[in-house]
Length: 598
Image (cartoon, helix red, strand yellow):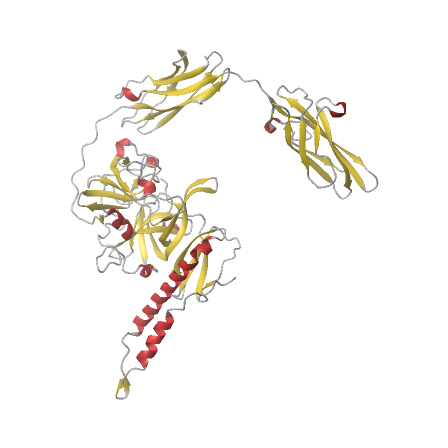
């Protein structure tokens, strides 16, 4: 592996220099004056210098390392012998051109983490809800109550932006459900309203934390974990001896034992193994590809991998000792690492403090009045429908009340424009928060041309008539003449061309939209190997009826087969539809024809 160039001298020289000077100081009698620092203090100073040098090297080379394909971040950690190292976080164990040493002396440790995801996945409803319990904005699945925090104006739930603010998609004043929606939370389970969030930047700029607060009260959200966890966190953050609300020495985090309580993995214990991490965190995945990511800097890395899982997002991480001092806010991770924000930066941004008061909360409010409310949650229809076609109109019904419906009821769908009933469907019993999907078939054979208002109407009499109907609009358009062309047949023929050669011929038939042979269409394609050949022809040539021929006249005997693939068909005022290609005799897929050596 290559070494990146050394740019600064190691700070250890300064330490050794101090030792030499101390050893050469004045003496009294036969004994030297003792060193000002004990051996233990000098070792600690050397360790701090090594960590500082590793951080400096990491920051100098981070941008260059991030250019290596598959590298998603860097951090600083400790080796088994206590030396500092730069950790390079990678997606997998594929070989990569990553140096083993930075600046000639800082070792590099390549760690396979997999894709680092923002933690979010979906349990019990509790009042007041303990720290670590499920919570979430109505538009997300579920995350974790991290802490109860306060300022002069009131108390708040602290969690992640992507838990309480839907990754910037929420509005101030939105409801927060406990439990979160994935765990069954509905509007009847609101415990807080979104008060503030730090917007996430998905453009590639640096982010320092993923956090939000929602206003609540002590009867709705508690300030301690359940009895079987670590209890109440301390109100004083870790490493803040001078009470300035900022870590005194971020580098001292390395090796710190920590714990957390979250909605998915509950109480877990781990160790901080990385600091100053700069990495990309994925927020949305389509199949296996990350489609929405944000870059974070100055992050904390915790192992082992089982320290957290999806749904633990927002958990408060505290020291694993009697102090239980807040250290970080969990927000992302992979199968091998957990990534967390510095709690000092989070609290100072919102100007709040951890609520560690021990006074009991006031009694919970009385339960809400029973409300039966079934709503037409949404109605979806295609924007346009060709007259004569049948379109599907989807209506989603939702129980937005707090009472279960025990009997079935009907929902009608009407074309209000033409005054026609499209259909009537039944909905079964619905628990609060449950949905029921209805699909209606709208036959437009007799529908008028132009815009249509389609109205879904619940026939259940409930406590709120305002949401018993929903409307969608769709436009019925006239049938357009079909002007498509496609390949209707491919036939391959092989012929000997002397003792050491053979030739391949492919006959192509082009059809119009009604599958009738079409003369005058120009076909272009590619042979699977190079050589002197024809790769274009026009149907009707050589007296053919909708057919033409392409030829590969001289193939060596070493070629066992050759394939001709159609790439385009052109005809004035018509469109080539490859998806319609076919071959009635089954010798090809209608687009590519294989010819085997005779």
